Image 1 (cartoon, one colour):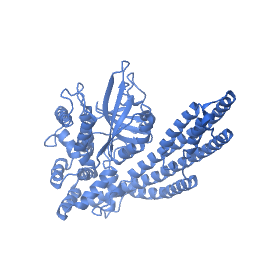
Image 2 (spheres, rainbow, N blue to C red):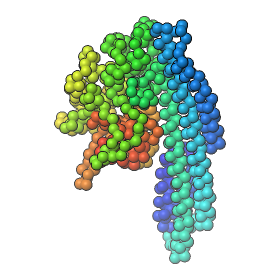
Image 3 (cartoon, one colour):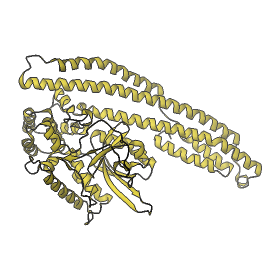
Image 4 (cartoon, rainbow, N blue to C red):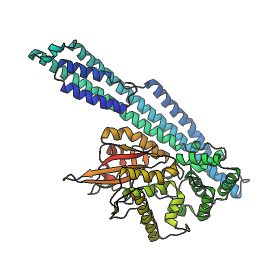
Length: 525
């Protein structure tokens, strides 16, 4: 039983509570109580978790002075002997190092806080469970042994009164055990979410290759697009760093030398980062050379506009309240030169549309084909939308979508994801139904880890009107901060919804109140 997940324990105790309340015989009550006691208590060594959290916080305090020292170098000027391109390179490295140390300090501090919160919650849960378990054991002892077969068939008035009295005594103890299990479950999921996020942000360490220097790894990991909060707009994800390093190690000497020259000739950290992202997406050197010819020397704003569909404008992850139709007020438009990355209003191509945008997020060559056209140099929003619509139609047909553009089934959705997205992230997809809040809660840590690593997670949402008519829609989970999920809606927007809303069927803020329930995801394996 110790191998149960926290969610499974909550579910088991909920069922045992029903059994206790519904028992109509002494033996049935004894069995229900024993079943509740058999569910394992919240596990974990509070002392070890707490000590680790305190060590993290101490390390964070030590790192803060290092951050100040590095920051002083980056802001007070570099030695005169570092001039020209070397000086620019040195400035990039020192500035990136300052930010990396700052992130390390923050990560250690926040990691320590996450562990200390987990320790406090676990201590409370174990204490509450222990007291309830002791009381429930006393109720069980008061019932004595099980009745024999004949006695169990006949329950006299005084026996019924005793059984009901025991039920009334037992139920609050099981309720308390359930509350403790839920408290431990919530704390464990929050700690897993925060620690997974912090681990994914240590991106430089994901690139294991020796073909890139430690300094360059830091600069690449810390490069973001212009405007918006840096930490929400880094160009290379943890998965990008890992895959690009692996591809570099597989290259022959000539290709590696050619690629290193492309990096050296780049005019900005952003240009270098997009070349690495192209490599991570699985493109060969011929394709990357052509790509570099199209983007070489472009300023960071041009690069972001043409190569990064989803850009987070500010660090406000609240819903901003809701409009009359249930949609969030705090939304960002996903646009190229004012034209939205969206499906046609009259078509049910949400699966194809979200898939196309997801691929563009992980494959900059594909993004440039859509935004910049054959030459990569176009700035024509109308031409972009024509190409986008044609690509949505192609993917819709690829997934055997309806001829009237009226939707695509799970099998077709998995097919297009495997063909369009998997080759560029290295992750195949596994269809997971989420019929209830427990299943959504159970999958949440895996969903959050995937998006933190840079692998978008497709999500299906649905709702029913007063006549029982179903509406369905496909969106994409593309980011996570704290207890908020960032959702791309192929209506051309992104917004944030809380974990609690995702779990409990209140997802309408990402679309509108017709579509409140997340019923399935395609999980990157």
